[in-house]
Length: 433
Image (cartoon, rainbow, N blue to C red; front, side, top):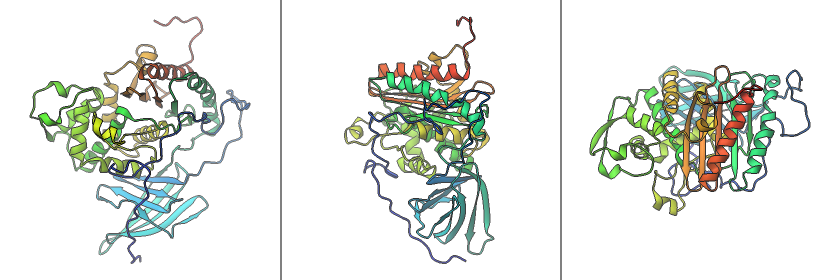
């Protein structure tokens, strides 16, 4: 029986000191060299044509992984020897476990926080099964089991996954041609056609997040809906002081008025509504809960550090950041039902399908290709991320750029079309309308 409580660790931060929640790593050097696609370097001379049987790789291990179970997550950082329990019934914050044991690709140990003991066994290999035992005084222990999530998740079929590797080289050429716009792209097969393989070119690029950060705001909101802590029909008072410009529709309405949580969530994505974003940040309790979500999923490049259109905060260096890898980590977890219930997952993707800002991914693809996406725009950033919903070829994508927005838009379109043409090769002689 565990009896000794461990104090919550105060983790060193490298992100903006004024942000609520954990700091993040410094912004990636825009001049960094191209990363290889996951599992192979583009142009490495290996043959990855269909029918070729490459040597399957061992499933990758990660320094960080998190256990997904109904209603919560349990995050493990095996290098930093920290864990975090975050579920409907509470959040421990980051807790130090200096006695954590790491052997044979498995992290195990036990901590006590607030009189509750957490005994865990979490593999550091994605798609494995982990266990967490929650022990409270005078109550029977609760054993939670679930899938382990890493970034990236290993492929379910390395042989099928190898067929996605040539896309890395094609995207690397697009990235190299974008001389004015440091760019990064991460792509994950969700359909199984390519063995759920993930590839990336500059996947750790860390530009300003712009409105892509609104995806994390929505996921934290829907997580609370799943917990029964928030209801979509609840009303939120929006006042004239909440009104800001930029993208969105609420700014054109008359205030004060009560707006439902559902409409705020829908407008947050459909119109990339800045008023909805800021109201929901306040409704959720500030930056800290959204950053707690990010931290619990071990997404080290992402942070919410300022509200939408808060130029004073931006001038103080308080900025929102993310990376292609972190975006696809979130999108993949949503798709796989690892962070939201199926109902909330479908609602979120439905909002993304209603997106009205369609000058990037949708504009690059043939008319009628089903997509669900979220844009992000600043004078020095242009992004589009989301899902290609092509039947039997569903794919998560994140196209992020820094530098001038106009040329960044074109770089995003080129990356988006490159992915589409790889997934759906043009038919010889066909004429696109």
